[in-house]
Image (cartoon, rainbow, N blue to C red; front, side):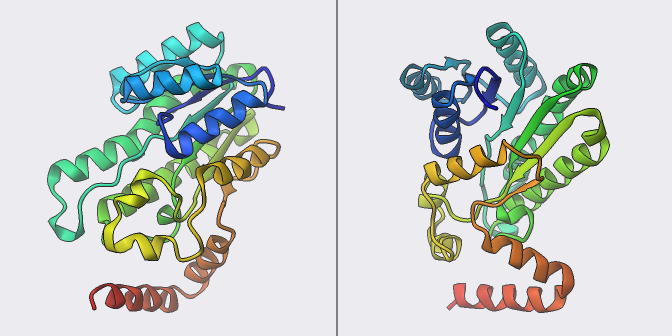
Length: 254
């Protein structure tokens, strides 16, 4: 049940985060929304009846501030959606700063939030940590190494949390969509067609899948069901999968 639960959604000024926050608020959750874009996230909060806590959801100080203010607003955080993410850089020309930002936002933000949330969840015997990763975290994203590596890291950390704390009442889930009609897809350039190969979903469609997933404890949340088949091929015949990905790369270069 979602009604009455205290929920935090980062990266909620638009896209998937906004859609998830709106869906859960409509279902009766008490929601805190966060984003670096203060004006946009405050507008979302006013629209859906949430509490806005603008700011950084990645740095150690930023995460501590967000968790503290969320607890003040909600009493307890029952569900955490680590949804904020970035995609920067192309190929081996991706800069040191772009690599650092990808790892900071896409991986370390989750680590820092979990440090503050999980011990209290273990004490009381329940809590839910949901990471918005990407199909790139199970497969790869051609052209974007920092995004691919950091989203693999996000999935790996979520797996570690699940393996370590599942028996203590902590549910961990990883949302791994392909193309979703967000600003990130709009700015993907030549990768747009590849990302939308199995149809680009609306953020609200992703939110519907996520809402259903909250009724269970399954780790992988796959808005594009086809991703399960791709991941299975990767796991059983890595060479065939890698050859297929290289053929896609060659198409991009034509």
